[in-house]
Image (tube, rainbow, N blue to C red; front, side):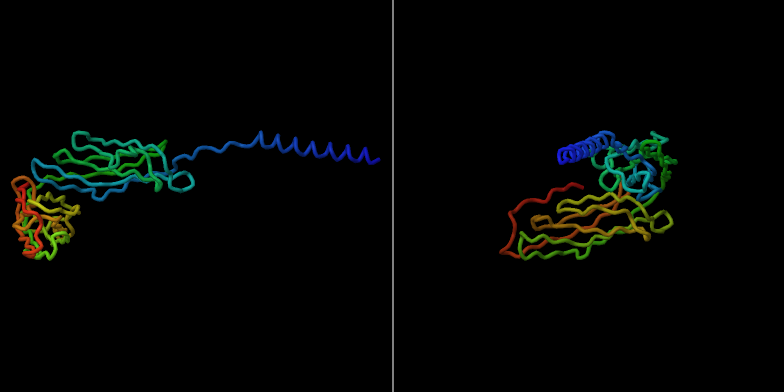
Length: 251
């Protein structure tokens, strides 16, 4: 009797193990996520520029899967309806047109210097998004540039300092122009990245000494023949001057 019982238990155990193996062999393979929605975000959808010049704006695409989650590692195809008006540049060539962990691909739209309306498109799978960009050619003029303070005293030459620079841009009627991409140059030091002009037509940024030698420096803003400039003086303590060199004129 014990022998029969032991044989039945062994058979039952074999059936259980065999059943588990068959179940694992027939498990369902997970499907690849699919794009469910795509959208284009632009910093500015209206670009203004001077005659013979151009303008640009940055933006990014967001891809969501069918569950509404950010979709990473997805390839996005970009295009624009009027290639003669501008083109699209991927901001980070290392990732090319593939979405990051937040489902984004960053890009820049750069105009070719002509007025008109362009249509940016982005596609991922079967999902397509479009966004219009208006390009306006106008006659603007720089209004003023202010440096605060215009004289900077440095105690130790290895201490970097900065001054506030305010540049304003106006139209022919004297009204401030918002969203304008200001061109900027300086004869030395270092300039922080520039945002577009605000609602009053002005942009505020900083000029950093970048361990420059003492002397006078010029900051110029504008584009082509329409420009304005202002100067500042950099002074060090007499016992704490950096190595002597001549500021380079890069204006």
